[in-house]
Image (cartoon, rainbow, N blue to C red; front, top):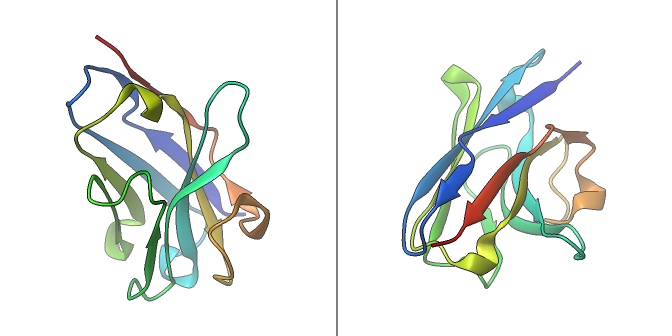
Length: 123
């Protein structure tokens, strides 16, 4: 019954910033580990950032460390991905995902998914 809906994607120039949001419904988000994944054309879906149920453990792909920040607001049932210093290679469809157990920051370990939001970084 958990539903996830992403928003905030769009076109941004290199070096710009964007904040993605994911609204959860059906369950309280505090029951879930969360993650952001992305898929560029012709590439496998990759884990961008994941956070444990408690929010005390986070993972970031090496390619986004220092630039992206995952956060959650359980009271609002929201997940966020703040993206700074965006690069053209960040262009992808970004997906919000949730899991009852936080195993790995890989798509196979996250059974619940949003519909995705397109992020395009281009000048």
